[in-house]
Image 1 (cartoon, each protein chain N blue to C red):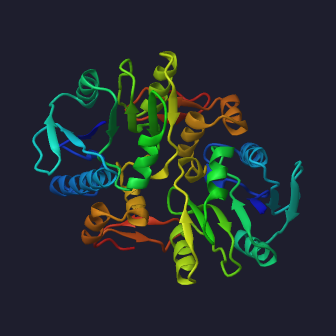
Image 2: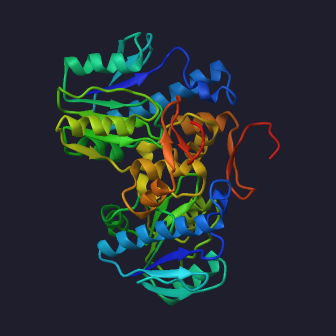
Image 3: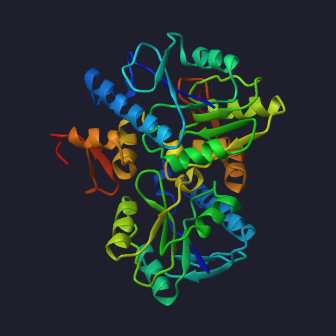
Length: 206
Length: 206
C-alpha cells in the first residue's frame, strides 16, 4: 500500500512560534517526521514524504506545492489503497501502525485530539480528504454518506498531534524517539511542582 | 474482578466552574458516571462506585470520605485483582474496556491526556496508587521499580477525561451516551466556524 506522510517544509508548526524560533521549529518538525518514518519502516511500510518542497531524507519524496487537501486528493486519484499518516505524530510505534493498517473498512480514520484527522487508510476510490481542524466528523460523515464501511482507530498515540506548547508534555512523557530527544536537548522538561504538570522551557523559572 | 469507579459527590468538576454552575456540574458529572457504569456493565463487569458520600444508583456504592488515593489504596489492600476506572471518561465503550481488562500484566495503565492515570488494573498486592496530575509516569516507574510487569493501554477513549471546557469538544464529537445528551440538551455545541473548532455555550455569540 502507498503510505504518504504529508510534510510542510516551509513554515512548519507555526502554533509553536511562542516557544521556538523558525530554525528550531524546522528542526523539531524534522525530528517528528523522522520518528514517524522510522516507525512506518519498522512496521514494514515504504513511506513517501509528500512535501511542499524538496526534503533530504532516505524515503522517497514527492514534491507538491499545493495545499494539503489538494495534494492528498491528487494522490488518492492515482492510487487506492493509500495510507496517510501525519508527520507530527511522534508517539506512533510499529504496533500502533499495525492496528491502523490492520483495521478493516473502506475508510479507516484515526481522530486527533480537538477534532482533526491524524491518520487515514483509504481503500475506496470515491473517498476524498478535506483537511481542516474539525475534519474527523466530516470525513466520517462523508464515508457514511457514500455508503462506505468506516472504522475508527481508538489510539492515544495516533490522537496526539503536536501543535501547541502543552502538547510537548505528551512527547516528554510518552515519547521514545528523536522528537523527545530533541526536546530534552533543547532543555524542555516537565515541571511537576504544581497541581498540574506543565512544560518548562530552558531558563524559565519553575 | 472488583472494579471501582471513584466518584466525587461533593464538589465535582471544579475546573468546569466557568462553564457550569454547581447544580449543572453535579448533573453533568452524574451523566458521565452513568456512561462509565453502563459501559462497564455491558462489558460484563459488576462495578462498585467508590464515592465520597452516598449515591443513588443501581450498582453498589462504597462510601469513603477520604481523599481518592487513600480510599483506593484501602481497597487495594483488601483485594487484588482490582480495576479502577475514573468516572469522567464518557467515551469509554465495552470494546475499550475489554482491551483494558484483557491486557496482561501485574499492572495495566491507561494514561490520560496531560499526564494523569485514567484507568488501572492492579493484579499484584505490592502496587499502590498515588493520584495526582502527573501520576502516569510515577505509577509506571513504581511498577517497574517493584519488578512488576506493566502494560500501557493505547486508547484515545480512555485518555479523554473531562476536566476543562475544551474537553467538552471530545464528548460532543465522539460521545454516544448520557454525557453527550446532557451537553446537547444544555445547548452546548461545536462551533466549527473558525480555524479551530471550539465549544460554544448556549446563548454565546459564535
